[in-house]
Image 1: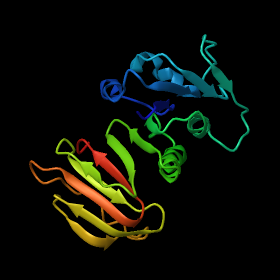
Image 2: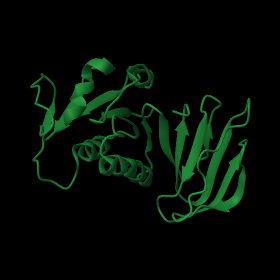
Image 3: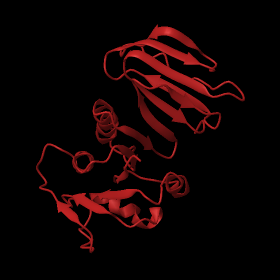
Image 4: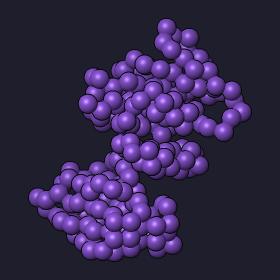
Length: 210
């Protein structure tokens, strides 16, 4: 059975009910610095705390805590992900990592690419939906999602096939310069599938227009 961990960042979470629904009892939950503000909303005790504590006070809990220097190459979130990879986890859920500063959000999206390159499973869940990387495995999009988008972030995405969607594709290419895979829709009563022969895609599933 795959070991899953949850990495909690400091971006705002408005829909805690949705975030809690994504959690499992067996998850190891890692709070990263200001991600500690979500302790009450998520109702899950930390398995590990990581941070330089420049944006949240160290709570000094009776929990393993890694105190990082303020000046470093990795953000607290990236350090936490790398640490959990080192500890043998192979399935990652990231919460509180999208929103606020765009540079942090985009950097956290790149964590999905990092984990995919290592053969790990990973997704980001936020208030609007979820994100994952499509590379060597076919991904599915259920009818509970209002829209989905496929974006090329790596400069190479060929042999793209999208089925059971309003805008299907077969052996197509999406370039970084022309991102035409925005706001597709699952056909009524069906589950859409997305695959790519060469390269990677960021699949974003959106639960509502808002």
